[in-house]
Amino acid sequence: MSNEIFFVGSNLATLVGGCELAKKGYRVRIFTDGAPLGGYFSGISLDGRDFDFGMFLFEQFSNIQSGRERSTINSWLENSAEISNWLNENVKLKRAITAEVYIFGKKYPDYIMSNKLDILLSTDVAPPNRLDVGSPYHASNKEHSRHYDSMSYLEACKHNHGDDFHFRYIEPFIKKIIGHGSENFLARYHRFSWAPLYYPETLADVIENNKISIPEYPFWTTNRGFAGDLVRNLKKIIDRFDNVEIIEDKISDLKIGESTLVVNKKKYKTEGKVHLGLSMGRVSTLLGFDDQLKGEGVDFTIAIALVHRDSIKAECGCIFIVDDKFGSYRFTDQDSIAGLDPEWHRVVIESNSKILQLKYPGKDKNRAIVQDLKFFLDISEKERLKVLKILNIQNGLYLPTLDFINSKKRASDKILHITKESVSLTGDLAGYGTSSINNQIAQGLQLSKSYERHTKD
Image (cartoon, rainbow, N blue to C red; front, top):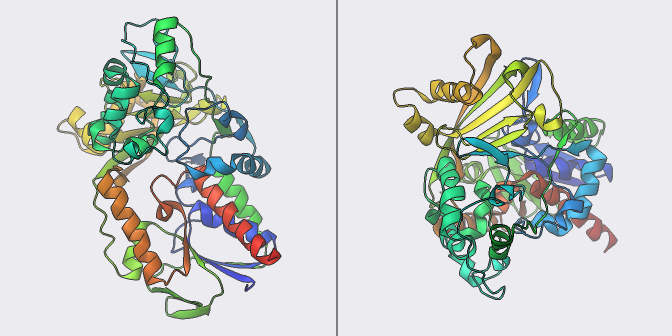
């Protein structure tokens, strides 16, 4: 194996893999395609402060063991102890305060991500029917049951949640995020929209017996409430090595074949695979094929702002906004989430662009999201709010329909065919739901370990 390893792309998996291999003495060459290393998780600096692009939280191994209802479709869970140890070595983490859900005009502990089912302790919601755990429809079988290959999230909820819980507590949130009903995507990938899929006996125990049988699922943030601190720390590490070369030029020409990599007309000899960390659309453009993704994309509008502490009514790091009184679906206070209380809090509010404009007809997306942020925080004094940046993201998310999942797999296979299987795929290229923080950390560490194994062999 050559001592020089090539990466094309700038996602987090690229940064993690490159950093770990540099530590082992390999020569690492990274072509970033003009993007910042760490990709989306790098965050952004505005007005002298660091912001994430919304809610980014970490998960830890010690809590995974009790979180039996978390989806393991994310491959990082298989190596969660190793990843947690690696995280703790590379960034200082602290427990994030429990998120909340705004619904029916009030705030409740978060039942969407954190398993906090307190809202059901005093409720008139009809309990779901108790399924036998052997039923192919039971949520415990969502990873491997063939029924889940084509089952919609709505159908799975009817079997596991019952209509009453689903349509009152979950469906309004789904529509706020994707602008469609939950019959439009596969149940197996429900976490793409943060939607839960509880076991029926879990909900029935709460509703019938006033008993919560599942513990809270905790999340973690950095001491500064900025997930991008991880990327910053890795960049500092990689900058210390003289065996790493980072080429930041935009790529206009890319060819990958057996033992050969060509970038912008310059040819390199390779042994082993070239590691790709670009988006599917970017790869298809550079390699010259139609990605042929058969799916519907969702557009998002995100506002990044500073809010004076006097307008922060109560400490809450993240609020999922189910109530249709507002156009946005999530509000994140990066300072509160880490237990901080500066004079000006860093906040981000996220909306589905279509839903936002339906809520504020006659206003463009930028004006609409500012209006929604003011409405949500009940801000009337303009000096208490500083909107620093508004992002309008086209096709920020694709619905995981059967057609889309299959077309994405065909596109990945096309990349392997064109490159004569001389690449490894990371991030978005590795499959649907494989681009989260922990998934990309897992990919980077696994890549590094693969070179260890080869050396030993």
